[in-house]
Image 1 (cartoon, rainbow, N blue to C red):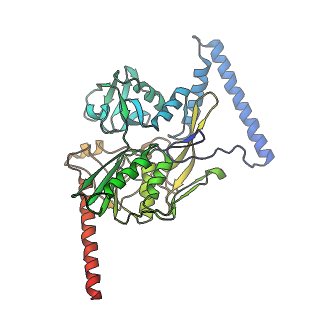
Image 2 (tube, rainbow, N blue to C red; image 1 turned 135 degrees about the vertical axis):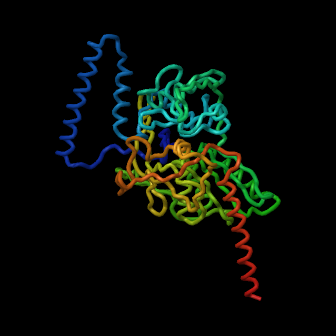
Image 3 (cartoon, one colour; image 1 turned 45 degrees about the horizontal axis):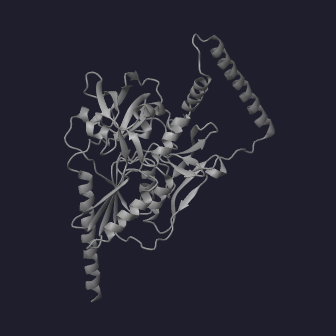
Length: 443
């Protein structure tokens, strides 16, 4: 998920976009479309009245109307949705990085509630939930026809309370119950450490929150202020689902001196947006390697794409999630919200990564020995797996072939990080050798 805010208008997945009312259309066309719309609205009103008068039990008008809106949004794409007032508040809480829950990222895959990834150091992670697990029940209630937001609401709750979910996993003969105690999920979006005796820095970004840019700068300053000069940086964006746009732009800008970071294209003028880099007071002139995988989505893909297009970093890992669409969050009068796909975004070179993702410069898979069936079961869910997703521009179903980018669950040995450190060490050796050769030639 990627979102940002502007005057209480929040944009998820990618960008803030102004909603402009009024599009220049010929009068006759506009009138015909308006007349047709009113005819259909009359049908809707008639059905609502019939249900309220004739349905065997009393019905709630709000539930009926909200349900109809949900159905309307479902005909669009996987990322457009309607949020009841309580759900909308939940979304606003998410950006603060603290909420009561289990600690999992979920999505709908072929109509089934599916775990994208458990968040590190959370109850879901510790109890052993895995990417690809299918949630078939929440507290003995089937998740069939349950919306994503309904599922989130049911799994969140006060810290210390329990929730039982039933999981189907390849290898399970029948659904298995997991009873999990909710905690206040404090998602610390930035973690860092020194490697190779302080010569290489490592920063892990789990998502883009309100304070991510500030915390990132603190981490960078700490790494650069060590006893030894920093000779390279590993930026870890693996399993980062996105977050606030302004934070992703800030972090990209930290390593770029000029040029585009990202831009968008939509129907309306207000949806044509460009974000550009500004010169930094303290340029960071060391090499950077960005780690990505199939769980790196939206904001992560913007950062990776910008640094890759500007040749500022080497991207290492496996192909990213492939979410290249823009959602605008539009507050409604009753406190509810509408999340609507309004545009596509593009990397500085004009690439759309929709359903294709960012392809790393260096492919490295974190994996141990698995049987073919195990490897199949461990493949991460991506944008192209979601029902109703936008196809890559110019692509057809026949040309959109999935790659084998299987990842295992976290292993004690991190092959991707090890390879990144090796590359940075080699980078320094080659640079030192090049300088020595130039000095020898000038003597």
